[in-house]
Image 1 (cartoon, rainbow, N blue to C red):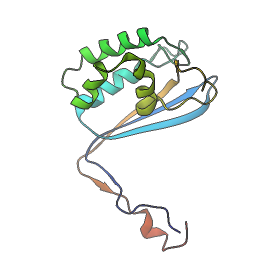
Image 2: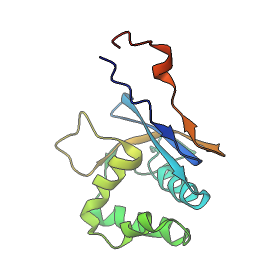
Image 3: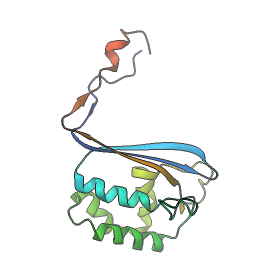
Image 4: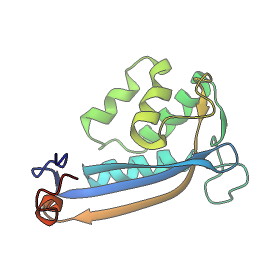
Length: 151
């Protein structure tokens, strides 16, 4: 049975890819967000840069350690204050309970922890940030190449 959905598309707009890891470089993960505006990308890039490690001169910050909800909320609000034109969806982060920030960040740019699943304040380390621009929707055509082979 073919599990590919032939109707998936990459929406027009900007795409963000954030690669992260935890501990000593374990459990690499890439989170991808698509169909973003330029303002959304600027917000997310600055936010992702908060999660470098103390060993990384370019993105030094909260990565690969536990960060209190209060400290994280202050940092996210500071970043958001510099991006007043971010989409309404992301502005909602500022009005939500700050305890939701760790979950929101894992869901969007950091990815879930593996070795630190019992530490709700642990933040993965951002290793790489890539931004792409697609002027129009891109249709997935994977299914065309499997000819119902049961993949």
